[in-house]
Image 1 (tube, helix red, strand yellow):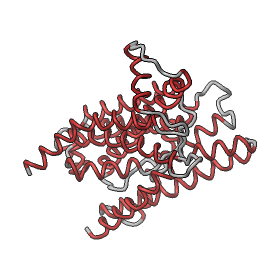
Image 2: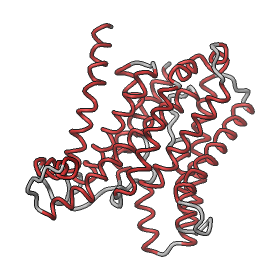
Image 3: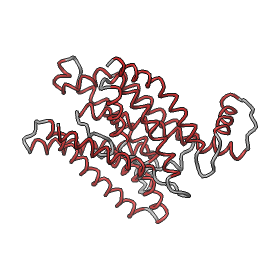
Image 4: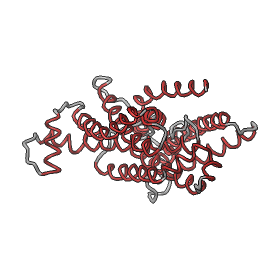
Length: 348
């Protein structure tokens, strides 16, 4: 046990190094392959005024396109993994994930209503529309799950978990249908193609102005989770158990759910709905570092960042001459992981 904990602690120290290496590789790989030396020299010129000789076109590709894309991928991976940690702890549901529970679909609907249908008349940003959609979707899913588990004489954890997942699937389908209706009603053919590609996860249009909001919500979300790490641990014993340990359950649950909705809303508005990150990464990290949130939160954030940068690289090289939506790659990993978690839950 001591050896396992030492290994997990060492892994947490090495994870930032792995993340930096993944970002450098993600910046070098693409339609125009670049050497790591070119990437390093370009970044050194910008950050430390090193004055290395670098071809102007290569430097532009690195600084204007690929490096901000890798940074945003890392921020989104960290943020989505954190939302999975929070939802799984608060709902005591191992399958809780913003994508499966309809938050991503709701955020997509809100973003599309603002961007395509013109809801808000220009006074509402795409991120605000996505945030509103995520909150609305979460409210609908929780209300439907509560009604379903109550009608079935709920109370057992397995029934409540099943009701939440089924409600999430229903919510996802409903909001996806609303999004499709909005696109069919208001978008032209070119807009529809771009939006459908974006909805499956797309980082092609990422620029430097997208870095700040993604980094801000991910860092703030991570800090909030770490601040409330003991409260998240307490939810392991249920809401009554957490309350008996001195946790203000309504305040903590409300603030963390609001933070989750904000993270999902902002990230989806920038890169689209990327599924399964919030499901796969927390489970993998819980296996490696344990269930205590003082380690699970930073481990999941770092692993989520590495996972999504790597997935973005794979999406660019899996099919020669074509960039796949990043959601396709995460689904190829996440769907089998979802099945595995489902089977383990059925056996226990």
